[in-house]
Image 1 (tube, helix red, strand yellow):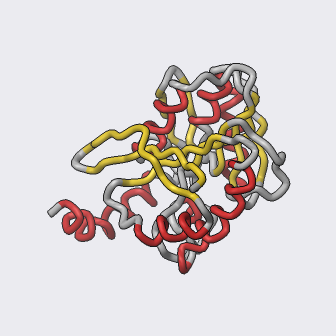
Image 2 (cartoon, rainbow, N blue to C red):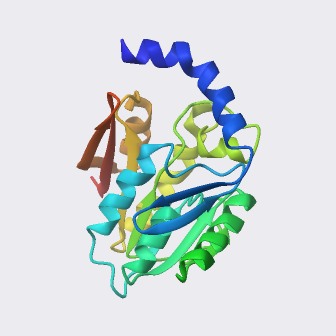
Image 3 (tube, helix red, strand yellow):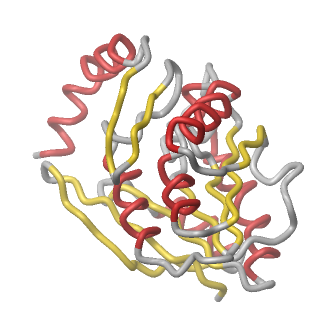
Length: 219
């Protein structure tokens, strides 16, 4: 029943979100005072970011290197920095990079914000990588839509998983959050083809939808 209801409401919700996110919105969470700029994935409207933030808070990050891949407004990156990590927040959306810089300054935390398509131009090793990926199998038409749409054939994951393997082999711990409503079969198959499996480490249900944090491990 819930997936049907979501499909019926989806056009209305998309129009509402486009209107609502067309101007800067202030958002407070985790002791952080954030400003979310237009065109940037909102870290409060979508509970996936909050669940990843909760998980990152539980990690021992002091002195560790940490990457938030696809950082949006930088909520997870800022929590990692507050936990003592050396943090890079990357995103393919230039507006998100400016948003991370803004929020780091607002909260007095040190985060290096870098424009990057996946791992292009990033250091070769991190102790931790946190990913809140797009997972809808459509072609993004704008930078903002890249936070939601993977491109045809789940192109985002086609490119992501092989790059993660080499990093995981050197000891990087990778965490990814996905919706429990998602048909994960195509994504799981792509991961398996690269030698990666998913293990659930944290789950939360909100309004009937489960969000799940997975740790990625090598087969």
